[in-house]
Every structure is written in structure tokens, then in C-alpha cells.
Image (cartoon, rainbow, N blue to C red):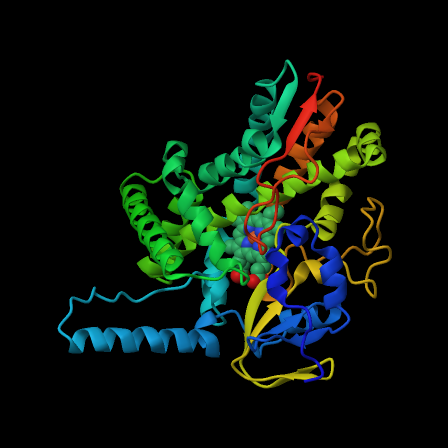
Length: 419
Ligand code: HEM
């Protein structure tokens, strides 16, 4: 088949690519819409990605894909066989996916309720604490030496912020830290899922559900000035969100707050330490941090791809994607499309018309974008301003084992103190 991709998408997990996947994406873009060996379609060019993100024939509900239907049929068959053999079979619960994996009208109803609680005032109030949290983390390293930007700042900051915003006690974080990481791995289409991994995912899912159920029960009795208490009240007022939907929404917000902003702050530190000119620029003109964060969301974004399912045969760029097929939209490749962005491989703070896909586009556009922007602007602003003579200790740094939510696992920086 002419449009079949010669390069297997799974190569992206090779360590040579996870350090720098952009040359591979350049190869992908030679075939804007390409069928892969497993029958899924890879879309790598800007206009095609945007068109599909806005196309109502394209679904975010994985249950509608042929691949997922096959998995569910196999599971049902195994279950039926076990029952026939008189083996013990666990009760099956109805799974309610979070609204990021749902289509209208359900998606729109749930998103509207969330947005009603994601108010600028609430974000503004949390925002006031961000500077203080960054200061506290950096001040621990006043004597200089070595800092791990990930463990010492970029991870704890968004976690503290999302916990505060939602009303999750910060001390509980130790419990859901690893559940969150395991569940985020589900987004990576390159990960082969062995039985052991599937069991791990199911366990993490069960535990985070139980945790959230208990927390919501507590908040119902003792509401606080936080987003989850707001959601509980809004849902009762409007009667428009079931308990299972509320739990799924709360977990989605918690995981989104854990696994994304960390990468933006870390990628931003990496890019500025690789370019002395960029760092000098940011120090001279601190207000440039705002366009810098925008350019980062294009140049080295935290979210590299999102999956969709075709609900009808869709012809795009001369290729027909058949109904039921999985579509992988490589947002980070769209961000580097030479037909849309001049000098796409350069990080240019003064770039004009930077409509990047870092937060997606269309009805699923990131709910947390204003929060993520403030966190990254403050953290990167303080890192650029305060670290004296910062230098990367290891370059390239080791990356997390997740090609969809991509970022360094550690970023060690040597420096001579704080200003
Ligand atoms: C959706 C990126 C931070 C909550 C998305 C999408 C992207 C994205 C690309 C679109 C998904 C799709 O089209 O399928 C990012 C990045 C972040 C970030 C790069 C940090 C730098 C956050 C934070 C939160 C959040 C902090 C929560 C507080 C969500 C939610 C959705 C979403 C709930 C689903 C929206 C919907 O389906 O309508 N995000 N995100 N994100 N994001 Fe974020």
C-alpha cells in the first residue's frame, strides 16, 4: 500500500528517539496520513491534525475503536469460558471514562460543570501561592551545588498546586504518586501492554478510585473552599453529574496536574540551559518569559500525541481512514511542521502567529491551560533569574519511559548559589 509508513511508530520508544524524536517526526511528515502495520493511522502534519481535531466524525471514546472492541470481545469470551467452567469470576463494574475520553453530548455536559468551577478567581488565588512554593523549593539550595530540577521543583510544584486547588490533602500524595504514573502510561500507544502491566493498571485504577470515593465522601460532610467541594455542590444543584462521573473527573484532574506541567518546566529549563543566548535574553528582559513558555509549548511540548477513532470513513490528504480505525495525532510533529512554522527546529521567543498544538485544539482544548501557563512562567522565571552560573550536569538527560507524555526523569544542574 502506497501510504503505508515505512517507519514503525513504535521506534519512538527507542532511547535514541526519546531523547530527540523531532528528526523522526520530520520523516513522518513526508506521508501526512499514513497507515501503520497494526492498522492504525498516523497523522503528523499541522493542517491535517487541526482538521481532525475539529471533525465531529472523529471520536475521543476509545470504546468505539475496532481495536478496543476486539479487546473487549476477547475479555467477554474469557469471562464466559470461566463461568462455563465454574471458575470464580469477579463482579463486573460499569466503567465510566473521564470526559477527555468522551464525545458530545456527555463530554460537553461534564466539561461545562468543570469549567463552572475552574474560575479565574480560584486559579488566581492558587496562583498567589505559586511564587511562594517556588521560592521555598529553591531556597533549600541556597549554597549551590547540584539540583535535580525534576525532583526538587518541577514535580512537587504542580502536585502541591493541583492538590490545593482540588482539596486533596498534600500528605496523601505519597499514595497516589505511583498510581498516577502507571495510569499516565495508558496514554502511550507505543507501550506493549503485557498481562502483568494490565493487572498493574487495573490495580492502580481501583486504588485511586477507592481513594477518591473516600475523599469525596469526606468533602461532602466537611466542604472546603476548593474545586472538588465546588463540583460536589454544582452537581447536586444541577443534578447533572453521577457519582461515578464525579470520581472519574476528579481523577482526571489529579493525573493531568501530575504528569504534564512537570515536563513543561523541565523542558523549559533544558532549552534555556542549552542556549546561553536564550538564558541571557530571559535575564535581561524577564517579561519575555510569557512568549518563551508559549514557544516551549510548540518547540518541546509535554503532550506528544493523542489517540482518536474514526466514526465514519474519512478522506484526508488523499487517504481514506476507515470507520473504526485508530488515529494517532502527533501534535508535537504538527508543531514542527515546516509548512506551518518557519524555522521549526529553532526556539524563537519572538515568533509571530504561534498557534501551537501544545494544549490541543477544538472541544477538548486543555482545561488546565491557564494554570499550567502561570506555573511554568513563575517557575522558569525564577530558575532563570536566581540560579548563579547554572550548567547541565548530564546532557541529554534520562527520559521517562512514556513517549506520549514526554519529558526528562531527572535534570541535574550544577550552579554556584542563588541570587
Ligand atoms: C486536555 C495538554 C496541564 C486538565 C489537554 C489536551 C492537551 C493538554 C494537549 C488535549 C487532549 C485531547 O485533545 O485529547 C496539557 C499540557 C499541560 C496540561 C501540555 C501542562 C503544561 C493540565 C492541568 C490540568 C489539565 C494542570 C488540570 C488542572 C486537562 C483536562 C483535559 C485536558 C481536564 C481534557 C479536556 C477535554 O477533554 O475537554 N491537556 N495539559 N491539563 N487537560 Fe491539559
